[in-house]
Length: 269
Image (cartoon, rainbow, N blue to C red; front, top):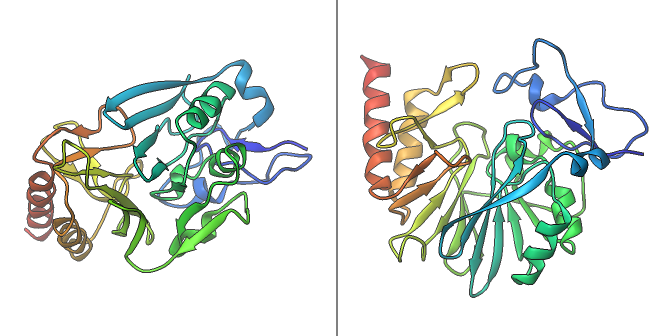
């Protein structure tokens, strides 16, 4: 049996003899089924074509991305701390060099996910690294395509992962969409690791908030206001997004507040 991967979004499916009939993540209005139709990749074939690249972002934070890109092309972020290491979001493939390097750095205490578009290879990463707990917000469990007892649902709006590292459910893009607050990052000013709930745009002084980015479906003003209020209570001066260019090096908290005000003003004008 093969682990089948959706070519469009990178989601892993439970092992089977034949590829899946459809992908519920792509069929959701926040994503899309390509005009050419749903296509599938067999997991065992990936390492002959793809590899993982490492990018040191700042002390104790590293980006890990697949080249050539698979699916949406996001990166995972490896966060190291004195209390253990955390992986933020996942990619569709873990190669042996990456597995060995993470183990050399002390392994992982937890894998934390922002939202279903980035679940991708989370079970593979967890199993290969010794059964690492996968922390998913309970609101988005319906989007899991490869179930595993290693998945630990969490509830509410906050979950402390390790001292100084906490998950916060902001909602918006998905009901369970979350960010990771790293209080020691950016030389102690704080870092926010985001998925698509807070999305750094082309003008990196600003962010945006959307129900669907590929289909250009906005969020209502009340949701954006709620996200901004929750973000204002967090400690961060820097944001790292899912791609290299999605990065605000300083003043990120002010960028979020200013962007929310602009978004709401234009929706209501």
